[in-house]
Image 1 (cartoon, rainbow, N blue to C red):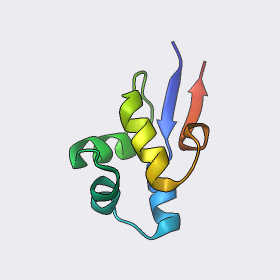
Image 2: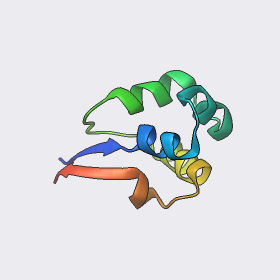
Image 3: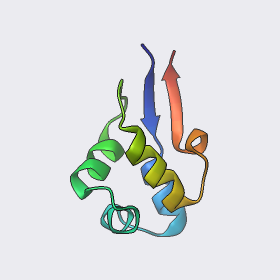
Length: 70
């Protein structure tokens, strides 16, 4: 099973947004956004959240996800 990291902090910084603003704009619950942003690696991620976050940042899902280990 692979591990991934979401580039939420980097993309939010580029836009000048806080994690709360990311949550408000994407419709993803703040605690989820904060958890995803703080975790250095994850084995599982909710695809619906990924899609919403990618759409909010106007990037492809591949640009939001960094593969750490396959």
